[in-house]
Image (tube, rainbow over all chains, first blue to last red; front, side, top):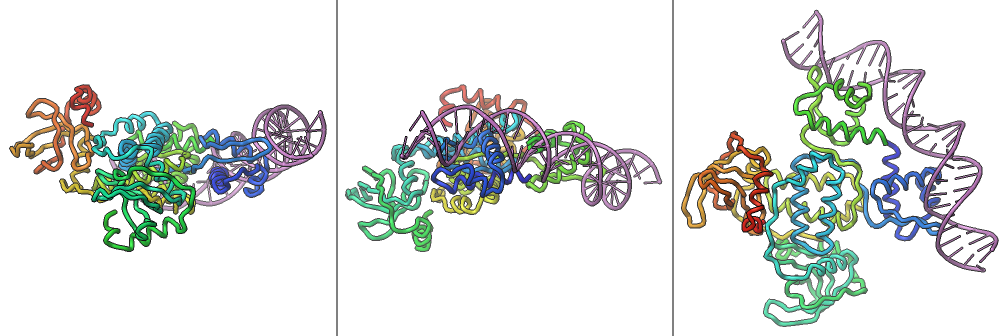
Length: 230
Length: 230
DNA sequence: GCGCGTACTGACAGATTTTGTCAGTAGTCA
DNA sequence: TGACTACTGACAAAATCTGTCAGTACGCGC
């Protein structure tokens, strides 16, 4: 199974490089000939990897990762299906789409009888009563968190008082009725939660905030009164 | 990649047989020698398949399935993580455990940097306000649905009136605050929803109900007023 | 246009892996 | 005990993978 493992390594290498890499460089790193590398690229593409190659430039992999062969139990299949259905119905934007796609991807490689079992999994997700925010905002928030970028908020707090805030978002909490951004607030100079349904306007900034999101989460979790919330 | 494909086929074959199958029969069906089959079994076990083999008996696979190598996008990874977290926190019983396991399984095969990204996915699920039912009941209901077995219910309807019912459960709906069993009720001779928090006592019966759960679901969905609910 | 760097393909022989055969051990059931 | 089966080791044959070489095509800078 040396080849299978090498294919995995190749995907990881491509993931690490953001700029185009030449096939020659990849072949060198994997310690195989260029010809073999081209064959490996072809195999990965056949398996669904979105690898772009341009003559004179090199290879770029659309962000993603390869899962090796994996065993799941029946219960795990049901959990997977229910979870993806929940995300698809309750989050919105690109996350909903991703949940649908993930399920479709799994479904596509399953033998027919299992596919039927998956499609007919009788765990259903009820309709939402959440009416707070536009679906696209979720994507905006997620991107800001992932890239550690500041957000500009026109916010209305519990008392109805409006304010403009610059925040450092580091987590997004999904509650039954509402979504909450956990962030550092520059105005208050402290951690704060922002309910998505109280956001009047939101703008993604290119400015990076000066801490790591994981560090912020850790500090925030250590403050127990808040840590218990999520 | 002939071998990889054959391993997949082998798992499917094992899934189809409920009773022990001899290695010789499997080898014949796969058109390989017995020696090769033993090697394949060993490989699958190394990959995590729970295959039991007993001399003089044959092989049995603990219900499960094998996923071939699969590409996922970053968004799909986030959707997967959030979905599993939701199932783990909000369902209970064996389904929660399955969600945790599924995530752990995926996490285990990921390269370190992706594992970190998975662990630190900052989409969180809020605490539940559901206080309706014991977690084990979910498992009981799921099993009854999967096996198409009747359930005996001591139920208290909306007006508080208690009643004993024999039902044919075919779906389980997850709402924000409550879970609902969709079933055919022998007492009313009609479809009915049963809120899990109004169930006083529940017993799984060995008696099979005389229809297919998918047929019941279809009929039920076609009755639009109810179909809109879930 | 020309040269350079790169992606990509086909052919074929050598290297590597997989497979079959054979031989043998050990466990379970009747 | 005998029949049936899981499992392992060794080794040569078969199949697959790999490297080398030769060639085409595309984009970019000069």
